Amino acid sequence: MASASDILSALATYREHIGRVNHRAMSTLIPQIEAASMGDPDLFECPEEEEEMRVEYVLGIVGASKHSTRPPIERTSDLLKNWDVLAPQLALDGASVNADSEWRAANRKAYTSAILQGLGRFGCPTGTWALPRDFEILMRHVDSLEGPGWYMFRDIGEKLVFWEGWGQSEYGVRDESVKARSVLDWYHQRGQPTEEEFTVTTEEVFSP
Image (cartoon, rainbow, N blue to C red):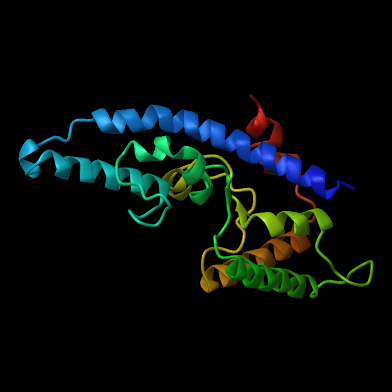
């Protein structure tokens, strides 16, 4: 069984890899946004309005509002300028971690309880259901594993989310609990999924 240090080392490697890939993508995308023609110049009364529109576009891409990050994204260049601080706040390193530790603890407890309740509908060969120890360690450090990409990419484009976690509100916890039960029902009906049922392998995701 992997030790806690092994799990946290793997998590750090994962986040570093996703963050590096996303930084490379944003280093190409942000300059294009800054240089893009705004079309009809009569739409804006001054250059500041043009810049505001560009900032709004960047915020939409990463799923943020102007004052939801620390430091705030007030110019299109701020995302790259403050990448090391902003990337973890926006899950641009492949994981989300809510800043409120009490919120995290409460929702982690609700999430765990919902999964174990769902598992309780099935017979346990060892007598009592329990979450894998490595998963419990992971849950203490992150709220989700978002996979590669950023908010807009994951929301309307290709999605490869490894673990959706418990969402950002109490409703998110309920939604993910339902998904967990649905997965259990699928497994109970169909058994162990085969490799052919997956379109992307772990090797493809983490290949250089």
